[in-house]
Amino acid sequence: YENLFWAFFYNIIGIPLAAGVFISVLGWKMNPMFGAAAMSLSSFCVVSNALRLNGLKIRSGKHDRKKSLPEEFNFEEIKRNIKENQNMKKTMKIEGMMCQHCEKRVKKALEALPEVDNAVVSHEEGTAILTLNAAVVDDVLKKAVEDEDYSVTEIA
Image (tube, rainbow, N blue to C red; front, side, top):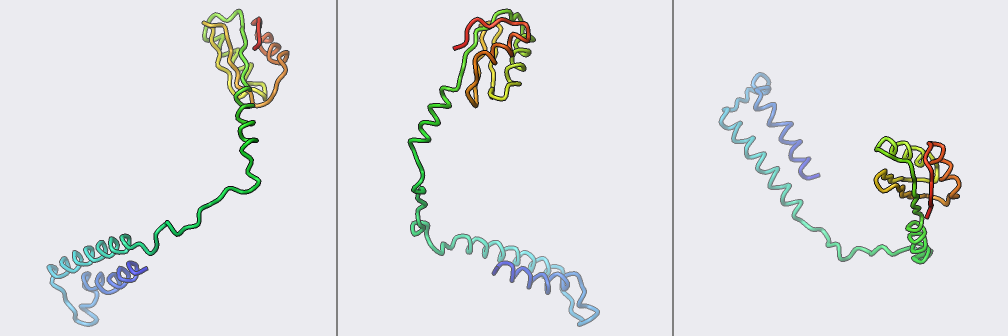
């Protein structure tokens, strides 16, 4: 707030004085060289004051209280969720895909299912690797692909 006070004070007095407002009212005149010097000095003072205030450390951070985890925080549950999410992948072997257009059709059909987050489909390998957000029955996946006129040989 100290910077704001001095900047406000300077602007209230200095700018009208430099603009010549006080000539008609009080007869005050200022040589432009003094006006330029005053503005330079003001800028120097504001910057040096800001550096002084920012360099001042009122207190160090070592006295801050450390945040602790809540007592109901359960690491085992988190580990189990991570393992479950890693197991939420399925690989499908698909026959009949010949090009990238085929990949796109299969990908679109699989990702239309609410349980499928992502499908990486390759016509070269004949596979679709699915990332799931929930358990899904293999028959649902198979039907989605077979509705696009491709055949599923294996789901792992």
